[in-house]
Length: 312
Image (cartoon, rainbow, N blue to C red; front, side, top):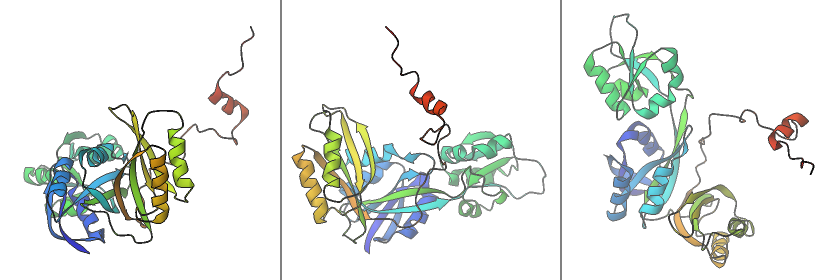
């Protein structure tokens, strides 16, 4: 493993520290918290020996477009070199007291409050937003007010001497977050890797996506993620794809040659070991009111509406 100064976001400190423990390609010489994604990426791009850890997907919000946009459009020499997935459970805490008064105000970061909506509603709590779960626990501890309740991971609350009020108060316990480790180079092939690319169209014309997809299927490269992003240019859209192959594998090289032949401009976002542990999944099953071939004729007809031509 390589040594590096490892940068992470202050707002995601508890999760970031868990993710750091799961890294296999980097050993931190030093761990530094930074306020913004842009600050992390700019430091990595211009400072040798630095790597950054950024949250890019979670169970509630899916992929974080704002983080990915900063990486894709705001850097030219920063690459994804590893991915890790970590879980987190949020509990409710207050100061130690013999007072039987119930909590009235819940204090936490916006993300934690959003994820604990059911607990807040059922207990009739007023919300107070702060910048992080660390700040929430500090405020509750320093206030000495038993009516204040902090929402935070247990290790954060323990550092401030708070006591639990309720466990696993988030709507989806053990929600997971995926992190990208970014550095100035892609990771070496392991034989079980992923590659993320951005494909920009030469012109926005019918069939571009089909031609791009054929470049992968023709060479046996499986895609695991595909989404589009609108651009402020004549190309109008780019496609962000993640494939199950390393950029240095011959089959990926052949696919890229076909993409170039189809007119694509390609940015390599990174090649990195495929995470084999728990994955980030949506906290939902099938969407309600889904209709398929097993549905009744009336349900299928409701999807299509009245498609029968009107008599002339």
